[in-house]
Length: 244
Image (cartoon, rainbow, N blue to C red; front, side, top):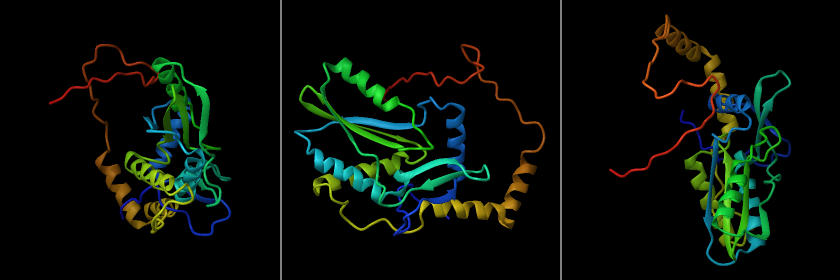
């Protein structure tokens, strides 16, 4: 059964948070985030200059409509009463926390880069949310839209869908996202089914196969490095761009 998009809708008419186990992928990201809560390694973020003035009411409405349409944007993560990790999908009328508009002009490109770095790198509160943030800055009279999401509620594929829906809702005046609502299995339902399948005969057989395949001492992968591996992961690194 293929994994559904993280942007599918919650059950229609939901009025209380839907609690469900995390998928295994979510649980791994949640565990890593608890190990390093200040890390920005799993932030999906970006910024873009917008042509012309911004209709604030339409953009704020479009952002709220985005939260009503996509259940993942209303989802937070924590431990349930039994201590097991769980996801909590808020009611479909909860929306998102809104979009922030700044009326203080940014002085120059260096100040703009520093402000964007601050907004995009701020840690997320996985328990309280929201796990999607957005805002508009004034870069010398030119609006700059920034957006940051935690990887627990979006990936690059679903982020493209969110931006598409945001643009469509903004063009429609910010009331609702035009077009049919997403359907099918919700992500919370899929995660619950994943746990049930894993606990069943098929899952136990797969686990037994992997335990046998990985039995014994695992080989060490010794790669040449120009410095010792640190005792604590720092996420520091660099990038080199080149064209083939």
